Length: 130
Image (cartoon, rainbow, N blue to C red; front, top):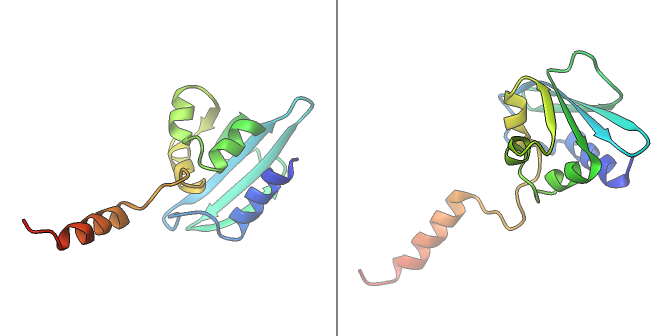
């Protein structure tokens, strides 16, 4: 296991998931390395996240990917749903958890909330004559 992967899952266990209060279920990540496969189980119960190492046969969804792509998704460099559509990783189980990955991983670098952008635009135009 790389330190970056462990840090990501430790952060999730400390409450790093975004907007997951209405989500319950489990996702197993099978991270492929040249010489092994690491299994991480993420269990979500109405926003409370638990993480454990090792396999779980009854996970709602299983994500199969390599460490490099996983870390790019975790850092927000790659959006999970387009990556799945390009077949960069595969998933078995409930499709809703593939969509939910967008909330589990970090936003893209430089991303801003739409309300902040709209508020900044209003503030910038408030002083201008119409």
